[in-house]
Image (cartoon, rainbow over all chains, first blue to last red):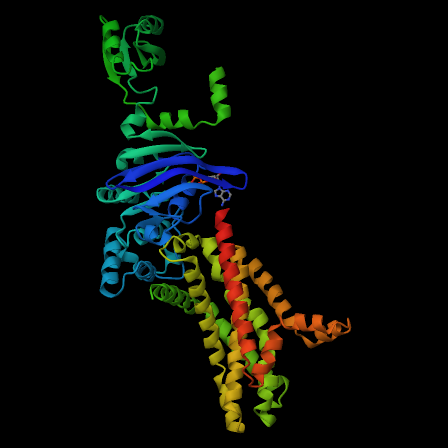
Length: 322
Length: 249
Ligand SMILES: Nc1ncnc2c1ncn2[C@@H]1O[C@H](COP(=O)(O)OP(=O)(O)O)[C@@H](O)[C@H]1O
Ligand SMILES: [Mg+2]
Protein backbone atom coordinates (compact mmCIF):
# COMPACT_ATOMS: atom_id res chain seq x y z
CA UNK A 1 0.00 0.00 0.00
CA UNK A 2 1.16 3.54 -0.72
CA UNK A 3 2.03 5.28 2.53
CA UNK A 4 1.71 8.73 1.00
CA UNK A 5 -0.68 9.46 -1.82
CA UNK A 6 -1.22 12.92 -3.21
CA UNK A 7 -3.77 13.57 -5.91
CA UNK A 8 -4.09 16.73 -7.96
CA UNK A 9 -2.92 18.98 -5.15
CA UNK A 10 -3.38 22.69 -5.73
CA UNK A 11 -2.63 25.73 -3.61
CA UNK A 12 -3.33 29.38 -4.26
CA UNK A 13 -1.94 32.12 -2.03
CA UNK A 14 -4.25 34.92 -3.13
CA UNK A 15 -3.68 35.02 -6.86
CA UNK A 16 -0.34 33.24 -6.61
CA UNK A 17 -0.52 29.68 -7.88
CA UNK A 18 2.08 28.08 -5.62
CA UNK A 19 1.21 24.43 -6.28
CA UNK A 20 -0.50 23.46 -9.51
CA UNK A 21 -1.96 19.97 -9.72
CA UNK A 22 0.71 17.76 -8.17
CA UNK A 23 0.10 14.00 -7.93
CA UNK A 24 2.43 11.25 -6.75
CA UNK A 25 2.66 8.32 -4.37
CA UNK A 26 5.39 7.02 -2.08
CA UNK A 27 5.60 3.46 -0.81
CA UNK A 28 7.27 2.09 2.27
CA UNK A 29 10.95 1.53 1.50
CA UNK A 30 11.13 4.47 -0.88
CA UNK A 31 13.03 7.73 -0.49
CA UNK A 32 11.54 10.34 -2.78
CA UNK A 33 13.65 13.41 -3.51
CA UNK A 34 11.91 16.73 -4.19
CA UNK A 35 14.09 18.84 -6.44
CA UNK A 36 13.35 22.27 -7.70
CA UNK A 37 14.53 25.85 -7.73
CA UNK A 38 13.63 28.22 -4.89
CA UNK A 39 9.97 29.12 -4.91
CA UNK A 40 9.01 26.01 -6.90
CA UNK A 41 6.45 24.94 -4.30
CA UNK A 42 8.35 22.19 -2.49
CA UNK A 43 7.78 23.52 1.02
CA UNK A 44 4.16 24.39 0.29
CA UNK A 45 3.54 20.82 -0.89
CA UNK A 46 5.17 19.41 2.24
CA UNK A 47 3.17 21.75 4.47
CA UNK A 48 -0.02 20.45 2.90
CA UNK A 49 1.00 16.81 3.27
CA UNK A 50 1.80 17.33 6.96
CA UNK A 51 -1.53 19.07 7.52
CA UNK A 52 -0.06 22.46 8.39
CA UNK A 53 -1.86 24.32 5.61
CA UNK A 54 -5.03 23.19 3.87
CA UNK A 55 -4.84 22.78 0.09
CA UNK A 56 -7.06 24.84 -2.18
CA UNK A 57 -8.07 21.54 -3.79
CA UNK A 58 -6.82 17.99 -4.10
CA UNK A 59 -6.49 14.89 -1.93
CA UNK A 60 -3.86 13.75 0.53
CA UNK A 61 -3.81 10.38 2.26
CA UNK A 62 -1.15 9.21 4.67
CA UNK A 63 -1.17 5.54 5.62
CA UNK A 64 -4.69 5.34 4.21
CA UNK A 65 -6.02 8.20 6.38
CA UNK A 66 -7.33 11.30 4.68
CA UNK A 67 -5.36 14.30 5.96
CA UNK A 68 -8.27 16.66 5.47
CA UNK A 69 -11.09 14.50 6.83
CA UNK A 70 -9.26 12.62 9.52
CA UNK A 71 -6.06 14.50 10.34
CA UNK A 72 -5.11 13.08 13.75
CA UNK A 73 -4.42 9.44 12.78
CA UNK A 74 -2.65 10.69 9.65
CA UNK A 75 -0.49 13.08 11.68
CA UNK A 76 0.40 10.33 14.13
CA UNK A 77 2.19 8.47 11.33
CA UNK A 78 4.26 11.45 10.24
CA UNK A 79 7.56 12.85 11.45
CA UNK A 80 8.21 16.31 10.07
CA UNK A 81 11.31 18.47 9.83
CA UNK A 82 10.13 21.90 8.63
CA UNK A 83 12.31 24.23 6.61
CA UNK A 84 14.87 26.06 8.81
CA UNK A 85 14.44 23.47 11.56
CA UNK A 86 12.47 25.46 14.16
CA UNK A 87 12.72 24.46 17.83
CA UNK A 88 11.60 25.98 21.12
CA UNK A 89 14.54 28.17 22.07
CA UNK A 90 13.50 28.42 25.71
CA UNK A 91 14.00 24.69 26.34
CA UNK A 92 16.99 22.41 26.68
CA UNK A 93 17.55 19.79 24.00
CA UNK A 94 16.43 17.12 26.44
CA UNK A 95 13.36 19.08 27.48
CA UNK A 96 12.40 19.71 23.88
CA UNK A 97 12.73 16.06 22.88
CA UNK A 98 10.82 14.92 25.97
CA UNK A 99 8.04 17.31 25.06
CA UNK A 100 7.96 15.98 21.48
CA UNK A 101 7.82 12.40 22.79
CA UNK A 102 5.04 13.20 25.24
CA UNK A 103 2.87 14.92 22.66
CA UNK A 104 3.32 11.80 20.53
CA UNK A 105 1.79 9.83 23.36
CA UNK A 106 4.99 8.38 24.81
CA UNK A 107 5.20 8.45 28.59
CA UNK A 108 7.43 7.15 31.35
CA UNK A 109 9.91 4.51 30.28
CA UNK A 110 8.82 4.56 26.63
CA UNK A 111 9.50 8.27 26.53
CA UNK A 112 12.94 7.92 28.08
CA UNK A 113 13.81 5.20 25.59
CA UNK A 114 12.56 7.20 22.62
CA UNK A 115 14.54 10.26 23.68
CA UNK A 116 17.78 8.39 24.20
CA UNK A 117 17.37 6.57 20.89
CA UNK A 118 16.84 9.83 18.98
CA UNK A 119 19.72 11.49 20.84
CA UNK A 120 22.00 8.66 19.88
CA UNK A 121 20.93 8.59 16.24
CA UNK A 122 21.43 12.33 15.85
CA UNK A 123 24.65 12.59 17.92
CA UNK A 124 23.24 15.02 20.46
CA UNK A 125 24.80 13.65 23.67
CA UNK A 126 27.23 16.56 23.94
CA UNK A 127 24.49 19.20 24.04
CA UNK A 128 21.74 17.29 25.80
CA UNK A 129 21.35 19.75 28.66
CA UNK A 130 22.18 22.87 26.72
CA UNK A 131 19.51 25.42 25.88
CA UNK A 132 18.33 25.25 22.27
CA UNK A 133 18.91 29.00 22.01
CA UNK A 134 22.68 28.60 22.43
CA UNK A 135 23.12 25.73 19.97
CA UNK A 136 25.13 26.10 16.79
CA UNK A 137 23.13 25.85 13.60
CA UNK A 138 24.17 22.25 12.93
CA UNK A 139 23.11 21.10 16.38
CA UNK A 140 19.83 23.01 16.20
CA UNK A 141 19.11 21.33 12.93
CA UNK A 142 19.83 17.89 14.31
CA UNK A 143 17.71 18.64 17.38
CA UNK A 144 14.73 19.32 15.17
CA UNK A 145 15.60 16.25 13.12
CA UNK A 146 15.65 14.17 16.31
CA UNK A 147 12.19 15.52 17.13
CA UNK A 148 10.92 14.25 13.78
CA UNK A 149 12.08 10.67 14.37
CA UNK A 150 11.31 10.51 18.08
CA UNK A 151 8.27 8.25 17.61
CA UNK A 152 9.91 6.11 14.91
CA UNK A 153 7.30 7.23 12.36
CA UNK A 154 6.33 5.31 9.23
CA UNK A 155 6.39 8.49 7.18
CA UNK A 156 9.10 11.13 7.25
CA UNK A 157 8.78 14.52 5.58
CA UNK A 158 12.08 16.39 5.62
CA UNK A 159 12.31 19.90 4.19
CA UNK A 160 15.94 20.55 3.27
CA UNK A 161 17.36 18.30 5.99
CA UNK A 162 20.99 19.02 5.12
CA UNK A 163 20.66 22.77 4.78
CA UNK A 164 23.29 24.63 6.78
CA UNK A 165 25.23 21.56 7.87
CA UNK A 166 28.96 21.10 7.37
CA UNK A 167 30.15 18.38 4.96
CA UNK A 168 30.61 15.77 7.70
CA UNK A 169 27.18 16.44 9.14
CA UNK A 170 25.64 16.36 5.68
CA UNK A 171 27.20 12.97 5.13
CA UNK A 172 25.85 11.65 8.45
CA UNK A 173 22.36 12.92 7.78
CA UNK A 174 22.31 11.38 4.30
CA UNK A 175 23.43 8.04 5.70
CA UNK A 176 20.73 8.27 8.32
CA UNK A 177 18.01 9.03 5.75
CA UNK A 178 19.15 6.21 3.51
CA UNK A 179 19.21 3.76 6.40
CA UNK A 180 15.74 4.75 7.57
CA UNK A 181 14.48 4.67 3.99
CA UNK A 182 14.60 0.88 4.07
CA UNK A 183 11.58 0.67 6.37
CA UNK A 184 9.80 4.01 6.01
CA UNK A 185 8.28 6.18 3.32
CA UNK A 186 10.42 9.32 3.11
CA UNK A 187 10.09 12.56 1.19
CA UNK A 188 12.91 15.04 1.37
CA UNK A 189 13.57 18.24 -0.51
CA UNK A 190 16.92 19.59 -1.53
CA UNK A 191 18.59 21.65 -4.15
CA UNK A 192 21.87 19.84 -3.78
CA UNK A 193 21.87 17.45 -6.72
CA UNK A 194 24.57 15.12 -5.44
CA UNK A 195 22.17 14.23 -2.62
CA UNK A 196 19.79 12.73 -5.08
CA UNK A 197 22.32 10.07 -5.99
CA UNK A 198 23.43 9.60 -2.43
CA UNK A 199 19.99 9.16 -0.93
CA UNK A 200 16.97 8.88 -3.24
CA UNK A 201 15.43 5.85 -4.78
CA UNK A 202 13.28 8.18 -6.89
CA UNK A 203 13.12 11.90 -7.55
CA UNK A 204 10.64 14.41 -8.86
CA UNK A 205 11.64 17.77 -10.21
CA UNK A 206 9.18 20.53 -9.40
CA UNK A 207 9.06 23.83 -11.20
CA UNK A 208 6.53 26.60 -10.68
CA UNK A 209 4.18 24.30 -8.83
CA UNK A 210 4.23 21.43 -11.33
CA UNK A 211 6.08 18.14 -11.54
CA UNK A 212 8.23 18.42 -14.65
CA UNK A 213 10.16 15.15 -14.30
CA UNK A 214 9.72 11.98 -12.26
CA UNK A 215 11.96 8.91 -12.15
CA UNK A 216 14.98 7.20 -10.65
CA UNK A 217 18.16 9.30 -10.60
CA UNK A 218 19.39 7.11 -13.45
CA UNK A 219 16.31 7.81 -15.56
CA UNK A 220 16.50 11.51 -14.89
CA UNK A 221 20.12 11.60 -15.87
CA UNK A 222 19.27 10.04 -19.22
CA UNK A 223 17.18 13.06 -20.05
CA UNK A 224 20.39 15.03 -20.20
CA UNK A 225 21.83 15.87 -23.57
CA UNK A 226 25.08 14.86 -21.92
CA UNK A 227 23.84 11.35 -21.49
CA UNK A 228 25.78 9.12 -23.86
CA UNK A 229 27.96 11.99 -25.07
CA UNK A 230 31.47 10.89 -26.00
CA UNK A 231 34.52 12.89 -25.01
CA UNK A 232 37.79 12.17 -26.73
CA UNK A 233 41.33 13.55 -26.98
CA UNK A 234 43.19 12.95 -30.24
CA UNK A 235 46.86 13.63 -30.95
CA UNK A 236 48.26 15.06 -34.15
CA UNK A 237 45.09 16.35 -35.78
CA UNK A 238 43.53 19.78 -36.13
CA UNK A 239 40.13 20.69 -34.83
CA UNK A 240 38.52 21.35 -38.21
CA UNK A 241 39.37 17.91 -39.60
CA UNK A 242 38.22 16.24 -36.43
CA UNK A 243 34.89 18.03 -36.49
CA UNK A 244 34.35 17.26 -40.18
CA UNK A 245 34.83 13.54 -39.61
CA UNK A 246 32.77 13.32 -36.44
CA UNK A 247 29.74 15.20 -37.69
CA UNK A 248 29.25 12.53 -40.38
CA UNK A 249 28.39 9.95 -37.72
CA UNK A 250 24.61 9.41 -38.04
CA UNK A 251 24.09 9.30 -34.26
CA UNK A 252 25.96 12.56 -33.63
CA UNK A 253 24.01 15.76 -33.07
CA UNK A 254 26.75 18.29 -32.50
CA UNK A 255 30.42 18.50 -31.69
CA UNK A 256 32.05 20.95 -29.36
CA UNK A 257 35.79 21.46 -29.18
CA UNK A 258 36.74 21.73 -25.58
CA UNK A 259 40.46 22.36 -25.95
CA UNK A 260 42.93 22.65 -28.78
CA UNK A 261 46.70 22.99 -28.40
CA UNK A 262 49.81 22.38 -30.51
CA UNK A 263 49.72 18.59 -30.16
CA UNK A 264 46.15 17.51 -29.41
CA UNK A 265 42.43 18.32 -29.65
CA UNK A 266 39.80 17.50 -27.04
CA UNK A 267 36.22 17.38 -28.27
CA UNK A 268 32.81 16.19 -27.12
CA UNK A 269 30.22 14.56 -29.39
CA UNK A 270 26.60 14.83 -28.30
CA UNK A 271 24.14 12.15 -29.42
CA UNK A 272 20.95 12.59 -31.44
CA UNK A 273 17.94 12.03 -29.19
CA UNK A 274 17.43 8.31 -28.68
CA UNK A 275 20.83 7.26 -29.96
CA UNK A 276 22.74 7.55 -26.67
CA UNK A 277 23.73 3.92 -26.69
CA UNK A 278 25.07 3.69 -30.26
CA UNK A 279 27.08 6.89 -30.37
CA UNK A 280 30.19 5.42 -28.78
CA UNK A 281 30.38 2.74 -31.47
CA UNK A 282 29.91 5.37 -34.16
CA UNK A 283 32.71 7.48 -32.77
CA UNK A 284 34.99 4.45 -32.52
CA UNK A 285 34.34 3.63 -36.21
CA UNK A 286 34.93 7.18 -37.34
CA UNK A 287 38.10 7.48 -35.33
CA UNK A 288 39.93 4.59 -36.99
CA UNK A 289 43.48 5.53 -37.70
CA UNK A 290 43.55 8.38 -35.20
CA UNK A 291 45.89 8.44 -32.24
CA UNK A 292 43.38 8.52 -29.46
CA UNK A 293 44.79 9.36 -26.07
CA UNK A 294 41.56 9.31 -24.14
CA UNK A 295 37.93 8.51 -24.81
CA UNK A 296 34.95 8.05 -22.51
CA UNK A 297 31.16 8.14 -22.49
CA UNK A 298 29.37 10.62 -20.23
CA UNK A 299 26.71 9.34 -17.88
CA UNK A 300 24.60 12.44 -18.13
CA UNK A 301 24.51 15.20 -15.59
CA UNK A 302 21.66 15.91 -13.21
CA UNK A 303 22.51 19.57 -12.86
CA UNK A 304 22.21 19.97 -16.60
CA UNK A 305 18.84 18.18 -16.64
CA UNK A 306 17.74 20.32 -13.76
CA UNK A 307 18.75 23.53 -15.47
CA UNK A 308 17.30 22.64 -18.84
CA UNK A 309 13.85 21.76 -17.51
CA UNK A 310 13.47 24.37 -14.81
CA UNK A 311 14.57 27.42 -16.76
CA UNK A 312 12.18 30.32 -16.67
CA UNK A 313 10.20 30.94 -19.86
CA UNK A 314 12.18 34.00 -20.81
CA UNK A 315 15.45 32.14 -20.66
CA UNK A 316 14.00 29.26 -22.69
CA UNK A 317 12.91 31.66 -25.43
CA UNK A 318 16.27 33.36 -25.45
CA UNK A 319 17.98 30.00 -25.80
CA UNK A 320 15.69 28.96 -28.64
CA UNK A 321 16.59 32.08 -30.59
CA UNK A 322 20.32 31.42 -30.41
CA UNK B 1 -9.14 11.82 28.25
CA UNK B 2 -6.62 11.87 25.47
CA UNK B 3 -7.34 15.47 24.70
CA UNK B 4 -6.72 16.45 28.33
CA UNK B 5 -3.39 14.66 28.19
CA UNK B 6 -2.45 16.76 25.16
CA UNK B 7 -3.60 19.97 26.82
CA UNK B 8 -1.63 19.08 29.93
CA UNK B 9 1.53 18.47 27.90
CA UNK B 10 1.21 21.84 26.19
CA UNK B 11 0.42 23.62 29.45
CA UNK B 12 3.42 22.08 31.16
CA UNK B 13 5.72 23.15 28.35
CA UNK B 14 4.41 26.70 28.35
CA UNK B 15 4.66 27.04 32.12
CA UNK B 16 8.24 25.80 31.92
CA UNK B 17 8.91 28.43 29.27
CA UNK B 18 7.55 31.18 31.54
CA UNK B 19 9.55 30.21 34.55
CA UNK B 20 12.75 29.66 32.61
CA UNK B 21 12.76 33.28 31.49
CA UNK B 22 13.67 36.20 33.76
CA UNK B 23 10.69 38.11 32.36
CA UNK B 24 8.36 36.01 34.50
CA UNK B 25 10.11 37.04 37.69
CA UNK B 26 10.29 40.68 36.61
CA UNK B 27 6.57 40.54 35.91
CA UNK B 28 5.76 39.12 39.32
CA UNK B 29 7.92 41.68 41.10
CA UNK B 30 6.34 44.59 39.23
CA UNK B 31 2.86 43.27 39.91
CA UNK B 32 3.54 42.84 43.62
CA UNK B 33 5.14 46.26 43.92
CA UNK B 34 2.18 47.90 42.20
CA UNK B 35 -0.32 46.04 44.39
CA UNK B 36 1.56 46.86 47.56
CA UNK B 37 2.07 50.47 46.63
CA UNK B 38 -1.55 51.12 45.70
CA UNK B 39 -2.93 49.17 48.64
CA UNK B 40 -0.89 50.83 51.36
CA UNK B 41 0.59 54.05 50.04
CA UNK B 42 -1.87 55.71 47.69
CA UNK B 43 -4.83 55.61 50.07
CA UNK B 44 -3.58 54.48 53.44
CA UNK B 45 -7.11 53.88 54.70
CA UNK B 46 -6.54 50.13 54.30
CA UNK B 47 -4.58 50.12 57.51
CA UNK B 48 -7.35 51.83 59.44
CA UNK B 49 -10.54 50.55 57.83
CA UNK B 50 -9.50 47.01 57.02
CA UNK B 51 -11.63 44.75 54.90
CA UNK B 52 -14.09 47.28 53.56
CA UNK B 53 -11.36 49.10 51.74
CA UNK B 54 -9.58 46.04 50.40
CA UNK B 55 -12.06 46.46 47.57
CA UNK B 56 -11.42 50.17 47.19
CA UNK B 57 -7.67 50.13 47.56
CA UNK B 58 -6.55 46.79 46.24
CA UNK B 59 -8.99 45.22 43.77
CA UNK B 60 -10.08 48.60 42.47
CA UNK B 61 -6.77 49.02 40.67
CA UNK B 62 -6.52 45.56 39.18
CA UNK B 63 -8.31 46.35 35.90
CA UNK B 64 -5.68 49.05 35.34
CA UNK B 65 -2.66 46.97 36.36
CA UNK B 66 -3.82 44.20 34.09
CA UNK B 67 -4.26 46.60 31.20
CA UNK B 68 -0.50 46.58 30.67
CA UNK B 69 0.67 43.51 32.51
CA UNK B 70 -1.61 40.89 30.96
CA UNK B 71 -0.89 41.85 27.33
CA UNK B 72 2.79 41.64 28.25
CA UNK B 73 2.23 38.05 29.35
CA UNK B 74 -0.02 37.13 26.43
CA UNK B 75 1.72 38.87 23.54
CA UNK B 76 4.20 36.06 22.95
CA UNK B 77 1.66 33.22 22.96
CA UNK B 78 1.24 32.89 19.17
CA UNK B 79 3.37 35.73 17.82
CA UNK B 80 6.52 34.02 19.05
CA UNK B 81 5.48 30.62 17.67
CA UNK B 82 5.00 32.22 14.29
CA UNK B 83 8.21 34.24 14.38
CA UNK B 84 10.38 31.25 15.30
CA UNK B 85 8.39 28.86 13.12
CA UNK B 86 7.60 26.39 15.91
CA UNK B 87 3.92 26.83 15.07
CA UNK B 88 4.64 24.53 12.14
CA UNK B 89 5.83 21.84 14.55
CA UNK B 90 3.02 22.40 17.02
CA UNK B 91 0.19 22.28 14.50
CA UNK B 92 1.53 19.23 12.66
CA UNK B 93 1.64 17.22 15.89
CA UNK B 94 -1.27 14.83 16.43
CA UNK B 95 -3.25 17.38 18.44
CA UNK B 96 -6.07 19.69 17.46
CA UNK B 97 -5.51 23.45 17.18
CA UNK B 98 -8.10 23.83 19.91
CA UNK B 99 -6.04 21.71 22.33
CA UNK B 100 -2.98 23.83 21.59
CA UNK B 101 -4.91 27.06 22.14
CA UNK B 102 -6.45 25.91 25.40
CA UNK B 103 -3.15 24.47 26.64
CA UNK B 104 -1.27 27.68 26.01
CA UNK B 105 -4.04 29.80 27.48
CA UNK B 106 -4.25 27.71 30.65
CA UNK B 107 -0.50 28.00 31.19
CA UNK B 108 -0.58 31.79 31.06
CA UNK B 109 -3.68 31.94 33.16
CA UNK B 110 -2.11 29.73 35.82
CA UNK B 111 0.95 31.94 35.71
CA UNK B 112 -1.21 35.01 36.36
CA UNK B 113 -2.90 33.04 39.13
CA UNK B 114 0.48 32.43 40.76
CA UNK B 115 1.31 36.13 40.58
CA UNK B 116 -2.06 37.00 42.08
CA UNK B 117 -1.70 34.40 44.84
CA UNK B 118 1.59 35.96 45.84
CA UNK B 119 -0.26 39.04 47.05
CA UNK B 120 -1.39 36.95 50.05
CA UNK B 121 0.59 39.06 52.56
CA UNK B 122 -1.98 41.78 52.00
CA UNK B 123 -4.72 39.40 53.10
CA UNK B 124 -2.66 38.39 56.11
CA UNK B 125 -2.19 42.05 56.98
CA UNK B 126 -5.90 42.91 56.95
CA UNK B 127 -6.60 39.78 58.98
CA UNK B 128 -4.01 40.84 61.48
CA UNK B 129 -5.47 44.33 61.72
CA UNK B 130 -9.12 43.37 62.03
CA UNK B 131 -11.72 40.73 61.31
CA UNK B 132 -12.44 40.87 57.61
CA UNK B 133 -14.89 38.54 55.87
CA UNK B 134 -12.51 36.24 54.06
CA UNK B 135 -15.30 35.00 51.79
CA UNK B 136 -15.61 38.51 50.39
CA UNK B 137 -11.88 38.66 49.88
CA UNK B 138 -11.95 35.29 48.14
CA UNK B 139 -14.71 36.47 45.79
CA UNK B 140 -12.56 39.50 44.99
CA UNK B 141 -9.64 37.24 44.11
CA UNK B 142 -11.88 35.05 41.99
CA UNK B 143 -13.17 38.08 40.11
CA UNK B 144 -9.68 39.44 39.65
CA UNK B 145 -8.42 36.14 38.25
CA UNK B 146 -11.39 35.83 35.89
CA UNK B 147 -10.83 39.37 34.72
CA UNK B 148 -7.15 38.60 34.12
CA UNK B 149 -8.29 35.55 32.13
CA UNK B 150 -10.52 37.65 29.89
CA UNK B 151 -7.71 40.11 29.19
CA UNK B 152 -5.46 37.17 28.52
CA UNK B 153 -7.87 35.56 26.05
CA UNK B 154 -8.06 38.88 24.20
CA UNK B 155 -4.23 39.04 24.14
CA UNK B 156 -4.18 35.49 22.84
CA UNK B 157 -6.42 36.58 19.99
CA UNK B 158 -4.32 39.63 19.06
CA UNK B 159 -1.19 37.51 19.35
CA UNK B 160 -2.52 35.19 16.66
CA UNK B 161 -2.91 38.15 14.31
CA UNK B 162 0.76 38.97 13.97
CA UNK B 163 4.28 37.63 14.29
CA UNK B 164 5.39 40.88 15.90
CA UNK B 165 5.08 40.87 19.69
CA UNK B 166 5.04 44.67 19.96
CA UNK B 167 2.13 44.96 17.53
CA UNK B 168 0.38 42.18 19.40
CA UNK B 169 0.92 44.03 22.71
CA UNK B 170 -0.44 47.33 21.42
CA UNK B 171 -3.53 45.77 19.80
CA UNK B 172 -4.27 43.93 22.98
CA UNK B 173 -3.90 47.02 25.21
CA UNK B 174 -6.29 48.91 22.95
CA UNK B 175 -8.85 46.10 23.04
CA UNK B 176 -8.59 45.73 26.83
CA UNK B 177 -8.83 49.49 27.27
CA UNK B 178 -12.18 49.33 25.52
CA UNK B 179 -13.29 46.59 27.90
CA UNK B 180 -12.43 48.85 30.83
CA UNK B 181 -13.70 52.16 29.48
CA UNK B 182 -17.11 50.74 28.63
CA UNK B 183 -17.75 50.65 32.36
CA UNK B 184 -15.50 53.47 33.53
CA UNK B 185 -17.58 56.02 35.55
CA UNK B 186 -16.52 59.13 33.54
CA UNK B 187 -17.40 57.37 30.29
CA UNK B 188 -20.69 56.16 31.73
CA UNK B 189 -21.72 59.65 32.78
CA UNK B 190 -20.76 60.93 29.35
CA UNK B 191 -22.99 58.32 27.75
CA UNK B 192 -25.78 59.05 30.19
CA UNK B 193 -25.90 62.62 28.90
CA UNK B 194 -27.07 61.14 25.60
CA UNK B 195 -30.32 60.30 27.40
CA UNK B 196 -30.67 56.68 26.21
CA UNK B 197 -30.39 54.50 29.29
CA UNK B 198 -30.64 51.20 27.34
CA UNK B 199 -27.60 52.23 25.31
CA UNK B 200 -25.62 53.02 28.43
CA UNK B 201 -26.55 49.70 29.90
CA UNK B 202 -25.66 47.81 26.76
CA UNK B 203 -22.21 49.39 26.61
CA UNK B 204 -21.58 48.96 30.31
CA UNK B 205 -22.55 45.30 30.13
CA UNK B 206 -19.48 44.73 28.00
CA UNK B 207 -17.18 46.13 30.61
CA UNK B 208 -14.95 44.02 32.77
CA UNK B 209 -15.27 46.68 35.48
CA UNK B 210 -19.06 46.50 35.72
CA UNK B 211 -18.87 42.74 36.19
CA UNK B 212 -16.06 43.06 38.71
CA UNK B 213 -17.95 45.38 41.07
CA UNK B 214 -20.22 42.74 42.54
CA UNK B 215 -17.43 40.26 43.05
CA UNK B 216 -15.35 42.89 44.86
CA UNK B 217 -18.20 43.25 47.31
CA UNK B 218 -18.41 39.51 47.74
CA UNK B 219 -21.48 38.98 45.56
CA UNK B 220 -20.84 35.98 43.34
CA UNK B 221 -23.46 36.48 40.62
CA UNK B 222 -23.59 33.76 37.99
CA UNK B 223 -24.19 36.41 35.32
CA UNK B 224 -20.79 37.91 36.06
CA UNK B 225 -19.11 34.51 35.91
CA UNK B 226 -20.90 33.72 32.66
CA UNK B 227 -19.76 37.06 31.25
CA UNK B 228 -16.09 36.39 31.94
CA UNK B 229 -16.21 32.79 30.80
CA UNK B 230 -18.02 33.66 27.58
CA UNK B 231 -15.54 36.45 26.86
CA UNK B 232 -12.75 33.90 27.31
CA UNK B 233 -14.54 31.29 25.21
CA UNK B 234 -15.34 33.74 22.45
CA UNK B 235 -11.79 35.10 22.27
CA UNK B 236 -10.23 31.64 22.19
CA UNK B 237 -12.67 30.54 19.53
CA UNK B 238 -11.78 33.61 17.45
CA UNK B 239 -8.12 32.71 17.94
CA UNK B 240 -8.76 29.32 16.38
CA UNK B 241 -10.58 30.92 13.45
CA UNK B 242 -7.69 33.35 12.92
CA UNK B 243 -5.07 30.62 13.11
CA UNK B 244 -6.95 28.56 10.55
CA UNK B 245 -7.44 31.57 8.25
CA UNK B 246 -3.78 32.54 8.48
CA UNK B 247 -2.68 29.10 7.35
CA UNK B 248 -5.22 28.92 4.55
CA UNK B 249 -3.32 31.84 2.93
N1 LIG C 1 2.18 31.94 3.14
C1 LIG C 1 2.41 32.32 1.86
N2 LIG C 1 1.77 33.39 1.36
C2 LIG C 1 1.97 33.78 0.08
N3 LIG C 1 2.80 33.18 -0.78
C3 LIG C 1 3.48 32.11 -0.34
C4 LIG C 1 3.33 31.63 0.99
N4 LIG C 1 4.13 30.54 1.15
C5 LIG C 1 4.75 30.37 -0.04
N5 LIG C 1 4.38 31.30 -0.94
C6 LIG C 1 4.82 31.41 -2.34
O1 LIG C 1 4.62 30.17 -2.96
C7 LIG C 1 5.70 29.84 -3.81
C8 LIG C 1 6.28 28.49 -3.42
O2 LIG C 1 6.99 28.62 -2.22
P1 LIG C 1 7.71 27.40 -1.48
O3 LIG C 1 6.77 26.28 -1.40
O4 LIG C 1 8.26 27.93 -0.20
O5 LIG C 1 8.89 27.07 -2.49
P2 LIG C 1 10.18 26.15 -2.28
O6 LIG C 1 10.09 25.48 -0.95
O7 LIG C 1 10.15 25.21 -3.42
O8 LIG C 1 11.37 27.06 -2.37
C9 LIG C 1 6.70 30.97 -3.70
O9 LIG C 1 6.53 31.83 -4.81
C10 LIG C 1 6.31 31.66 -2.44
O10 LIG C 1 6.58 33.02 -2.53
MG1 LIG D 1 11.34 25.59 0.62
